Length: 313
Image (cartoon, rainbow, N blue to C red; front, side):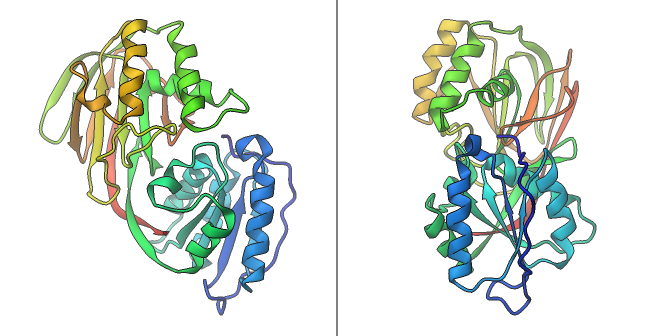
């Protein structure tokens, strides 16, 4: 969901002598169509109940989480995100855009509709249990993917799946896989023409007409296990190429997606690579971690950033 809110920021200064060091909490009160407010309240109560001092920000407009994270990067030890995958994505991009090599570790209190990043890292969905995971102070370094200078933790996609992600953001009241499948069915009612693409990997080149490029750093995307073998600590991106398909063929692929077996479909090409360049015959929609990119590119460069962020999980 877009990271927007009209809530005014409140402050409770984080201290260096706190168990988590200097701590900042960034909360998106609009995650899951405003249903995150209860999660945020429970998270704040849990942290305060454990005597954790923190600076508290609520997001006020798209990009605010990114701006806040960038400003906090240099003097924060722990940055806690209470929101969905889109909010986590903004925070990661904010930290990566900040000057200097030092970055705080990130804790997640899931409050989105899919929470795929948290699920992949084994972070509980309960606010109290997620807080306890943060307080356990166990970190794991994960890779990040990058598309044309914008980072992602979970996945990035070009083409039809990006159009599905944009449509899913309009569907209120649905969560996770149900929301993504409903959006996919709606987009498939008017199947767009495929794109002529040339894709260059570390070791090979693919050329042809494709409707979907899905680039995973983690197994899940849109609440679904698209690439169960994707590992956010192996320095590689797991890529799926889907050629033009009919509506009937696309619908028939959904059970494979639900079982995490799309890569086994005979029409689908799967490979791993650390870098990927895509040249397209015309602009295509693209997104990172379910959030639509502002410009439609015709040339795309994917890279990996190994062990870029420390996650509390």
